[in-house]
Structures are given as structure tokens and as C-alpha cells.
Image (tube, rainbow, N blue to C red; front, side, top):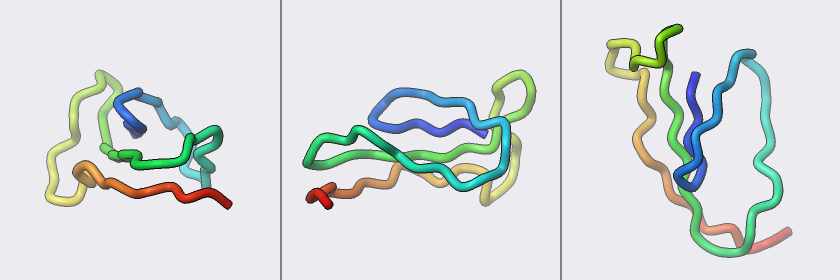
Length: 59
């Protein structure tokens, strides 16, 4: 799986819960994509979340 957070790509090799740490206050983007071993998107209607935006207001 590939996670793109604020334009930075991350490879996820284990299906598990993850936290996004170190975010500054403000707007951020996240995109999750199921990719094969070569990094190509696996075909299917639910294998790309599209870009999701959220506004981090602090904790």
C-alpha cells in the first residue's frame, strides 16, 4: 500500500493501525492506494481513496 501525506509518499508493508505525527496546524492531505510489488496501482474500484483533505486544529 502507498500512503501519500501532504505530497510525501510512504510505503506501508503491514496492515495495521498508524498514526500521523508531527503535523503543523492547518490543512493537510492524505491519499491511500493499493499497489503491486512494482508500485503500480492494483486495478479495482476501491483501490484508490482519492485525495482527502482535513484541517488539523490541534489537540
